[in-house]
Amino acid sequence: MPAKKTTIKAASRTPTSKAKRAKKPATPAAASPPRGVEDWKAAARWLKQRGIEDIECITPDLAGVPRGKMMPSSKFTSNTSLALPSALYRHTISGEYPDESGSFRYEPRDSDLKLVPDLSTLTAVPWETDPTAQVICDVVGADGEEVPYTPRNVLKRVVELYEKRGWRPVVAPEIEFYLVAKNDDPDLPLTPPVGRSGRPIVAGQAYSIAGINEFDELIDDIYHFCEAQGLEIDTLIHEEGPAQLEINLRHGDPLELADQVFYFKRTIREAATKHGTFATFMAKPMQGQPGSAMHIHQSVVDIETGRNVFSLENGEPSPEFFHFIGGMQKYVPATLVMMAPYVNSYRRLTPDMACPVNTAWGYDNRTTAFRIPVSDAAARRVENRLPSSDANPYLALAASLACGYLGIENLVDPSAPTGDTANEGAIDLPRGLLEALALMEGELALGPVLSREFIDLYGGIKRGEFETFMQVISPWEREFLLLHV
Image (tube, rainbow, N blue to C red; front, side, top):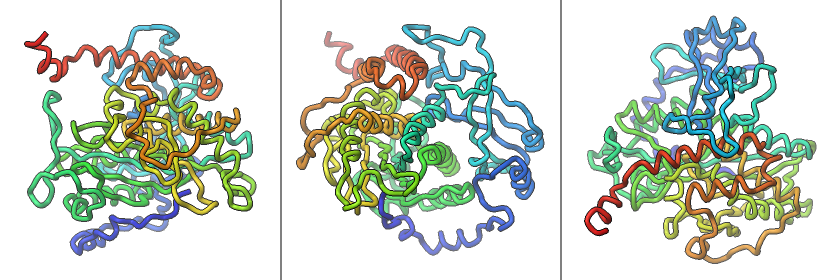
């Protein structure tokens, strides 16, 4: 997986920031680790050591939004049963319930789904004034069986396919996002925030330390919140857009990394709100500015030996490496709707905006969809540059790994690598939500990997969101059609 990069943010600490950090109370040694315990007995100790009063039992819905229940910590450790209605996974991002269509159906009784806390995710909620903890929950039916269409279970299903071959996928996400001025009118465009200099932030600040320092106190809080939750930031940089930042995470297990992205998104939004701004993970929040991606670095290791499956003993690329790339090329168009899940997502995937528009791959070529970074044989990996930051991390990782798995399973050969600029040529990806959805529903190979039940449910939700979008009249239509047609 990726070699360690220089931690750019660390180089930008000011004396004031360091002093502030030094005053931050350390977590007592007896209370470590900050994230995760082994069993319920350890959970009770963990909560008592920190004086936790309330605990949030949360789980991601199809959009990646945290849903769940809050309870006193004493109730949490007393074998309390937690349940949510199954309809929770059948509403759109706007909270509406689409009509039944095709294979999309509602559960007739809207019966309960049970929440099962994963104690390895237990951690603090550091922005709360009262001592509060949070834990991510798995979702099971009344019979105790995992529900196949919930995001965490979809990712688990894909990872288990690798495990059956004696392999373990390893991933490292990179998440871009924008800080924007507070906006309470959805009819008005978003604007960059004012930094500590007192001036609005402008574009063209890629890798700028000064750009990061414009939001030094906010970023300090992001670091403090992450430290309190046991979340590891590898690097933080300023991206090309105005007040566009990118956080890179340490590589590791797909489920654990998806959990971290789930926590990170919440953390960053809370830190931004505390400082009077919004943080947005929209794929294309501002017209004419770069979109925000969630690049995913992927490799596969042998569980017994720890050897990178993408490399032979002599250091050369393995057949599995090329079949993984071939699978990405063949199947990613059919899973793009899981990596670019909204109408807005496809505004990012356009020519001349520094993002992929086809399924080309190449060595250290950032204009391709699938980039092979420079590395030694042990760290050989494939970077998927197509997912946008608005994607549910569990579903984006599941889709990307599923495509690579199918490529290995079906011995799919890739095209020749691209050495030239690849994002100015032919566009061979879906240009919109419905086109992408039709590809997913029509690809028979995805059913056994992702589960047909998930595909049917996801399709109904996405069609419902598209119909809601079609009810909104855009400024473009008023400007060019009002008096001319």
